[in-house]
Amino acid sequence: MGVEFFGKGANVQLGPGLNVARVPRNGRNFEYLSGEDPFLGATLVPAVVHGIQNQSVIANAKHWVNNNQVRAAEGGRMWEWSGWSGGRRAE
Image 1: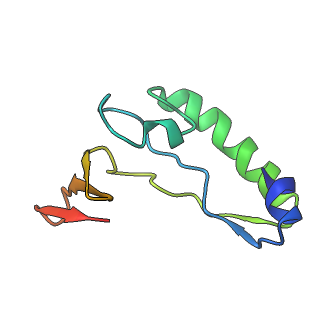
Image 2 (image 1 turned 45 degrees about the vertical axis):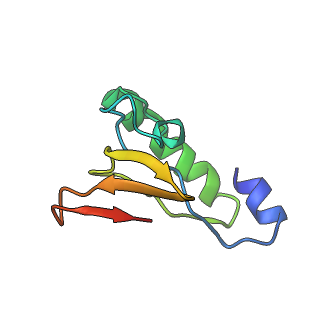
């Protein structure tokens, strides 16, 4: 991934996604390296980040906690229930 981003002239990659998939209906599960296994994530993530950053691209780890409750897409927006704010919000 680092080679691809560097080739496009990017300095930062917004990834990898690190959240453990706990809710099967979450619309973002496909983004996460670890899937449902935290041990697998702990094994894969350091190697992926190191590989990206070896190509002079910054790996910006995202969605590493509490990003499990994406409910549905309505009108081009993804709605989720945020445990932090206690309410519904759109991205």
